Length: 231
Image (cartoon, rainbow, N blue to C red; front, side, top):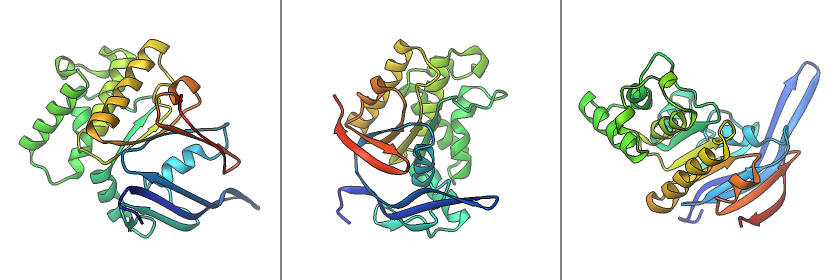
């Protein structure tokens, strides 16, 4: 695999058994993602977008095929190894933020670091740096209910960044935001990709959001039906 390729999916098949039926999501799917890419994945509901994102994040495993990250197979790792791999390499950003309502912003951001061996002092420094990066240092002690939707998503981005992952996986990150706030979040993702070298994979239904990506792929019934450069 080329040093420029961060992710390589080789002959991926994914099937679910539901009662007496076997549902095939992917069949012999191939995909390469370059280091430093900003990729938008579009397609109708049920096309396999979220399943693909979950496999890239090690949350779900293929039925067959190989998932290779930075030259090493991820699909053969144990659950404990996968958890450690995710903690060191992957940041997740979701549509509905998934913040813990009983924790303030800085405690929410710290959560991924509790899976690492970092001491309390270093965790505090990392949290402060992540909140500063998303311009929320002054909201560190605020609870999620005291923050706007855009601010909550910024906290979620800080949480995704706090362990300095190589990869950011975004599942409809602007789906619950108004257009102006969505564009602010997308501009932040563009900055993280351009200035900090983060590889970003974003599932979206929004053509306007996809325009921020370097390229767009379209999934339909588990197959890539078109590829095009973003405008």
